[in-house]
Structure formats: C-alpha cells, structure tokens
Length: 197
Image 1 (spheres, rainbow, N blue to C red):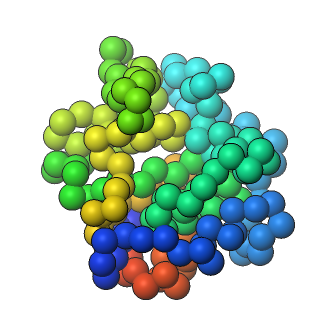
Image 2 (spheres, rainbow, N blue to C red; image 1 turned 90 degrees about the vertical axis):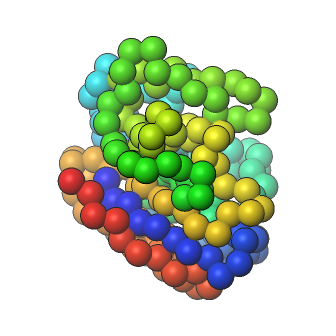
C-alpha cells in the first residue's frame, strides 16, 4: 500500500489531458494489467474472508469493463487521475476528500456487520473482512468502493489517495503512485507522501 496527499491550488476541476489517458492505447510508464495482476489483487482482498466477485470485485476490474464500453465520463482531475492509473496498473486506488474525513485515520480489516453507503443513490456495501481505510466515523474507503460521505466534489481542495498493492506485485504500487503523482503535478497540484506502517 502506498498513500499520499494532494493539494490543489483551487477547488478541483477537470483536466482533459488526464482524462484522455483513460484508454487502452495510452502511453504509460510500463504499466499494464493482466490476469496475473488481477489474481494477485483478488488474493489480497480474500485475506480477511471477503469474496471479491460480482459487484464486489476490485475497482480496477470495474474500470476495465467501463472503459471497454466507453461508460465513463470525466468527474474531476483527482478522480480521473486515480482512474487512469488504476486502469493501467490493475491496482485498485481510493481517493477521499481530506476535508471530509476525521482523524485519526487507520487501515484495518473491517469487522463483521460493517457497511456504508457508496453512491448518491444510497446503495450500501458490506465490507466485512475487507481491508479498509477508517476515519473516526468508521470505514470510508477500500479497494472495491469508496464511501459516499468522503468522496470528492466541486469544493474539494485536498485529497488522500491510497494505492492498494500486493506483496506478490513487488514495487508495482510504488510505480503506480509515482505516475499518479506525476499526473497530478502536471495538472498544477502538489503532493506529499504519507508514511504507512
């Protein structure tokens, strides 16, 4: 796992140059997803007993299908950069609005019965046994779906990104995070690494 914070010079907007990279033939720093990557990511999600199938599959797998069907539109540069790097690296990535989370933050397996709303329609996800980012109010992000309560909006000026890696994919999360930060820097943002245990 690799994490970093991002500060934007103004409330986050769109950057067509970043969104244009959300296609299979886009140039990348040597990152591409395959069955071995997908298998390693699923094994990480199974660690605590979670079943990464159906609607509960890793976010990076959802992106593969969404991009192939041209089903995604630009949201903002914070989310678009996240999606670009996740799509090409095969690693799920979370991005939350730092102004909406409450300290302290920690990463842990979610206990039985842990759920949260993940979209504006009020749909919930059961995250029991899944590695999650927690704030003072509970689970707010994971490799499958991030919480609606901490998602970015047109008012976002600072974010926290978590690239969910796997030991079997040594160095991949760091490489993905480095590219992710480069894309954000090119869009005018500044980033700072977060030390994780």
